[in-house]
Length: 165
Image 1: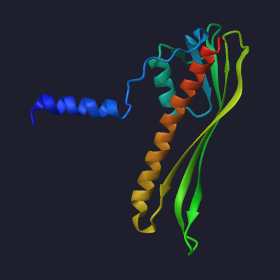
Image 2 (image 1 turned 120 degrees about the vertical axis):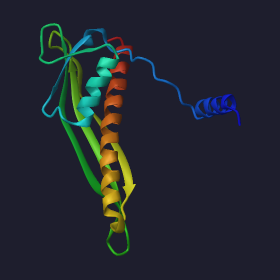
Image 3 (image 1 turned 45 degrees about the vertical axis):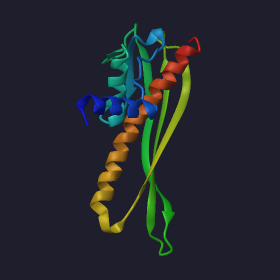
Image 4 (image 1 turned 30 degrees about the horizontal axis):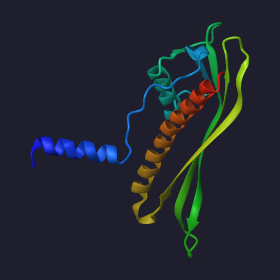
């Protein structure tokens, strides 16, 4: 098969599955400068959120100032719970839940969006014979949830912009 045919086939497969590049999000104008107030800034979620804000033309500032909006991440909690159990009372599947409570204030300190909660979940199978693989899968899913949460929050902020706020 020629190189051109492979490229055309790959392009066709990508478009056939619905893949499309995401454009820049239209965030509220008062967010041009934004301070992200969060207790723990070391999580994948917070790092990804900062990168997405910057990728969308937002200047993320290190401290609040009179010209910056404040995105408050009031809490970010992730936990695991059993999803299914065998007849021998052994867990076969787990559910990982990631929940973030957040709110947005404009530069004047006025509430632009009251406290909101986003909850995302992922499930995975657990095999006692493959504990290391299960641990790696859980770590991967936790990181994936952090990235997905940041994307979800950006989409919520974009919806706020579309509402005329």
